[in-house]
Image (cartoon, rainbow, N blue to C red):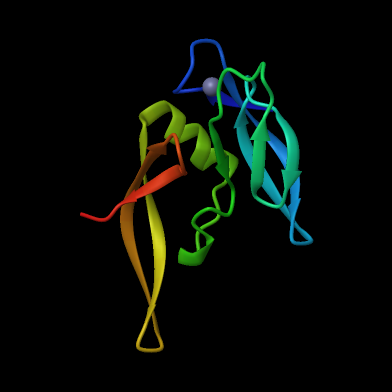
Length: 114
Ligand SMILES: [Zn+2]
């Protein structure tokens, strides 16, 4: 399934691939120009003919209670930023707050804290 154009290369598109990390099924949203020789958990080694390395883990914001859906990725690729609801556990209380996230070549997505 194609979710949008890759923001970091000319002709790549972002597709969803099924992965398993530590026994858990996780989607990896990844550029079609990226492929890996070895996969060991979240460690990857790119093949020589990969011209792009962009990827977003579905669970990259899971510590904030947020899993990135297909719809989130579509919006994010189109608009370059997306408002999401993140969870913070402070003093034993659950607090939700809205933050914008943007694309990040190294980490997939990053949260704009201010
Ligand atoms: Zn790409």
